[in-house]
Every structure is written in C-alpha cells, then in structure tokens.
Length: 174
Image (cartoon, rainbow, N blue to C red; front, side, top):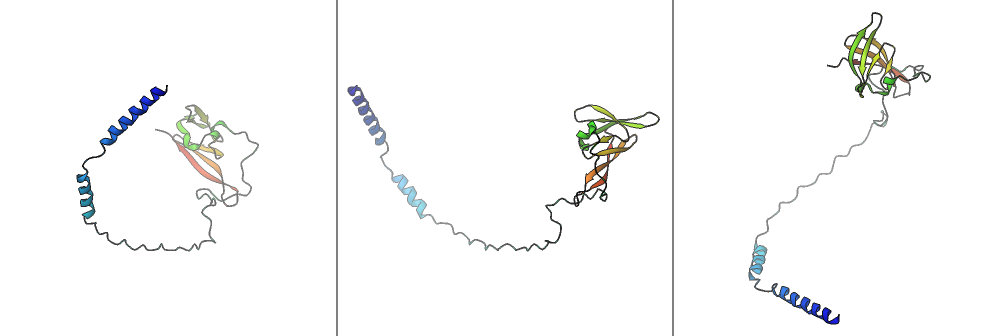
C-alpha cells in the first residue's frame, strides 16, 4: 500500500511541475500593454450637476375628508335612516353573482308580465320578473322591456353607515 501511494505522489508532483512550467515564459508583450494603458490619457469628467433639494410641501388639509376613509357613493341617492336590507328575506340564486357577470339574453311577454332571460357565468339561464332580486347589492328588478332589465340596488352610504338606493341596468347582449 505504501509503495502505491508513493508512486501516486511522485506522479502528482511530476504533473504539477510540467503544468507550472508552462506558466513561465516571455511576458514582455503583457508588460508593454499594461505600460501603454497606464500612459493613456484619462478622460476629464465634467463636474456633476448641482443637486437641488426637493421642494417641501406642507400638508394643510387636516380639516378635510381623509382620502383613506370610504366616501359617499356619488351615484347613490341620499341615505334613508330606515332603509336597510331585509335580514329575514331568503336570498335568491342570482344574488350570488355580480351584475357584471350576468347577461340578459332574451325577454318574454306572457301578456300580464314581462320576463327576462339572464345567463350566469356558469352558462345557466334563469327567468326573472319584476320583484326578483339579482346582483350582490340587493338589486331588486323594477322594470323589464325588450332590451334591458332595470333594477334598484341597496348600497352602503359611506359616511354614516346607512343605506341608499342606486339605479342599475343590464342590457340585452349581442
């Protein structure tokens, strides 16, 4: 075993000396290049522009409404202190969809009442009549004609936590 490891050590020393022997040699061209690069004129940099400090702004709207507090919905009517959703009413199926995801795909006239066909985002078609509810904001269908469904939504008033009516509509899809 010792003989085998001595021969390996000798082979390693021999290969190292051969490899290191290639590192020597004439390096005059490298030294000349370094001297030339050092002798080149360094470009003159212009002075940096003077940095002007930013303009200070003093906040003077402490007495006004905070932009981080919900405001009154501009499209909603005035708040009615007695108005609120009926907690005892069972929600209808179409109230689990936002109005944006519902599409009016047709209308029916049965003589006494106009009805509309509404398609949900899952592809199912539902029949609605005036008085039905749809949309996430307690939207009650008020009028149905050949090309649209009009409804009144009940939305929160941002100032006092009350509720206000907001008109909305869904048009017939092309």
